Image (cartoon, rainbow, N blue to C red; front, side):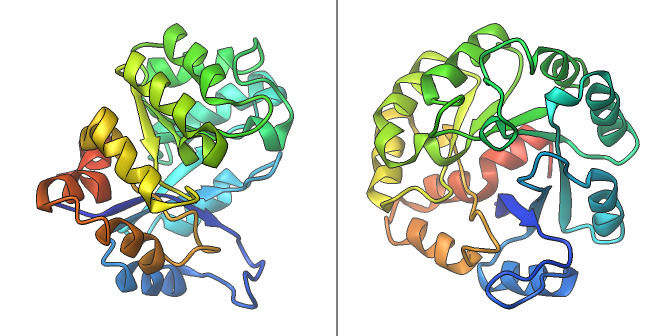
Length: 241
């Protein structure tokens, strides 16, 4: 199975730990972790440069653009999402309500989520803080049962139990492994909801991909479960062979 990292931030020319991550550096990080494809996100900032990201990934088939949209921008945000999906080829919408200061379960993101549903996109939602707790993301999942939702961070450390309950209730909710405090939480998720609903991400470049992959491998989940978590599930959601 392919290995896919569903969340890695494009920092443009801003260094991370003293290093600027261009295409070469990102792919070097991916190779260290045995990652086939990297989903890059513009942000997390209130005014993400999605058009610049589209140009950045255009000539590299291993890089997949993810459109981060700020719903508070109104109709232009919806238009940008449509352009991202239909012109720039971005199959994932990222919603970062904490960074943009809106409630994920409120009215603000509805036009953007409506458009994501119409475009049959995957939606990546930040979790684990005010405006975007696992239960609040559950309200989004209930409103949009057709939308595949990845709850990144699976609620962070204090919200893991709540995230697991949400994933048990809503078939369209998947949990992301990025920056979960202890790998044993990932093991718990595999045991309680099954490996078919868990998706790998590093949250790079701040977290090296090989480090994040190793935290999964050391759980010794078994070849099939490991393959699903590290990329099989996301490949299925995105239609990647």
